[in-house]
Image 1 (cartoon, protein in one colour):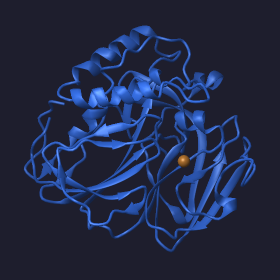
Image 2 (cartoon, rainbow, N blue to C red):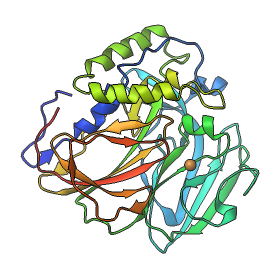
Image 3 (cartoon, rainbow, N blue to C red):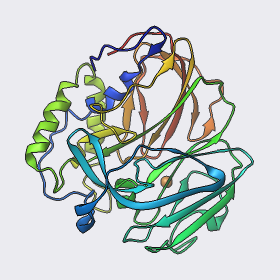
Length: 331
Ligand SMILES: [Cu+2]
């Protein structure tokens, strides 16, 4: 990113964003007609996704529906959403309050809702065939439990999850804590997608690869790293072909369309990083030292400040970091 930006009191933290785009450049993506993101006939007359919102967990409604996600200008993907956004709305609640999340299913397939890593009563765990029957099309189900543990979590469908999470049925679940007094508290959900779909054929994909490679820049080490990991996990038991992923997003946007996170100079910033994808993503922060204050919702004991470290986040993992916005160093 070579945007000139920001006044005296605002810093950009583009560096994080650019890593994801960077790690796509080393991939040799071959055109294909098939995509796991396809939503079959539904894809024809879909709406477009809106921006993620925030819901009070005491009384939240998530409606699962099909839509299109414009990950960057000119590139839309058929997706499944909660409340017409990918990620779905952030659900926030204070510790000790009772969560009520009603999930309405407006898709043509059954779904469920599982809060990843969160302690809930057995019947509220959202695992179809074990804790409940999946929520049939047209039906709804209310998940209710007490928010006993603070931290950064995420929710996703647990029905056919290899495909349903891949298509976008996920969002963040935050139970507020007092780990750090942050002036800014941002949640970044990481994911990867396949650009090849019926809507944009080989031509669109070629352009995409060119655009992405322009942002490769100085992340050769992370590319090697990420690429190595991609190769290791070329497919899942369900036949998911990992090598097809060629778009990397934070909160549903690629580097080409993401907006800077605005912070106050000298202010304390908390980033909640959640990997909702199937690949590990490596990030770093330019010019700032940071410390990991929590992993997978658990507070870190005596976190150390680090600088210029690559932060690798595996699928499903959450890492909360804290830093003070002092450097004006940008990419
Ligand atoms: Cu999970």
